[in-house]
Length: 96
Ligand SMILES: [Zn+2]
Image (cartoon, helix red, strand yellow):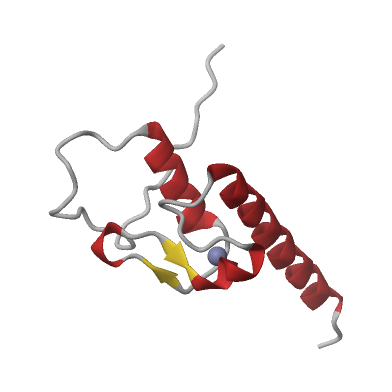
């Protein structure tokens, strides 16, 4: 039996195709880095000129999602998401 997967809505607007990007298709790693950058929970992202930077991640030792070590980026993303989840939990516990 096939299961119907809901179609994932694509992110739009955050990134526009850079005129300076090479003709090649973006690599899987690049797509993965971009996905992490877009969805790690911070809001003030810098993405001009095809850059993928987040100053909020500096406290995790990472800010350049395009060039920093992928393992470090994955750790930073995990920490950012946990921090965000913890905040949401704390907000839930607060009396209105
Ligand atoms: Zn960040």
